[in-house]
Image (cartoon, rainbow, N blue to C red; front, side, top):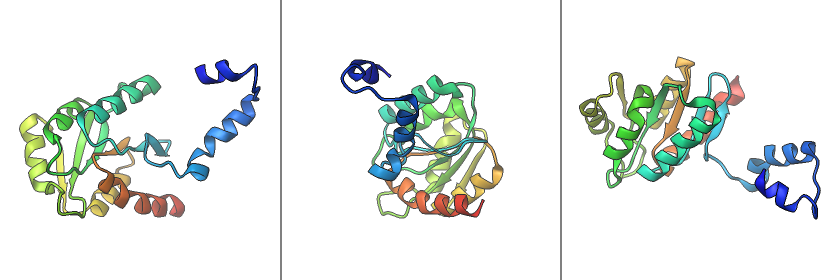
Length: 169
């Protein structure tokens, strides 16, 4: 809104036109998985955050938009060379159940290793899945608030699955 206020005198735009433009950003620009709400109720959110700073920013944004008290089913897959321990520590207080998965790339941390680290940190509910598809389908079927985050690879595998699930519903 601050940007709109700065340019409004030179480039006036109606609320309707602004809302229409914002709702079509993804269609026109191809921007996906930046706090993308795939399903509004219960919320199913995907984000490409893949480091502690990105996770912190994501959580802050979710807080600002009314999700501060939400405990998420978390689909999390990450690269072995990332600081996944710090990311898990940030996510743990917000997680109802972790769906640990292994993205299909050599750099990925195996789900069993991720699950073990999560349990060590204090996650109470942890379910390892050998593939992203298995984790996404299991989380979708829970029909609970769900957050998918941790890697561009994870989201790359997730998008076509979610597009198919949304088209079927």
